[in-house]
Length: 93
Image 1 (cartoon, rainbow, N blue to C red):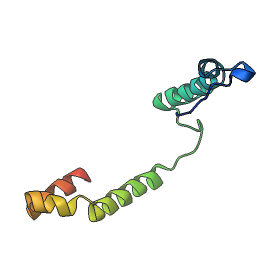
Image 2 (cartoon, helix red, strand yellow; image 1 turned 90 degrees about the vertical axis):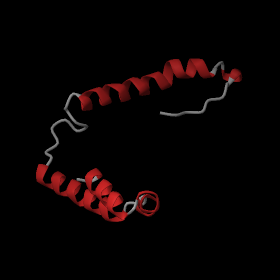
Image 3 (cartoon, rainbow, N blue to C red; image 1 turned 180 degrees about the horizontal axis):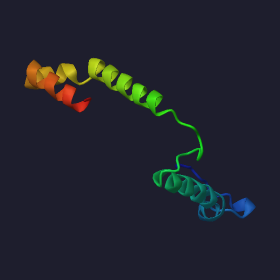
């Protein structure tokens, strides 16, 4: 989370009091959501996720990244084609 605050002395507000009131509430909500996500509840709680669709998407993404890795040209120049292809294939295995 990022915010840029300026003191509003004419309204009796300074950056610190804004953080303690408004921003802290938002941060606490975010932290609770993140903690529940880490505990395995996910963002939507009872959302019915199709694991097959997820797995297919991951495989497609890894294949795409393997084919279009932007580091390939510089790695080939530095380490040669054989090492580069082995490293990229291992990374996206």
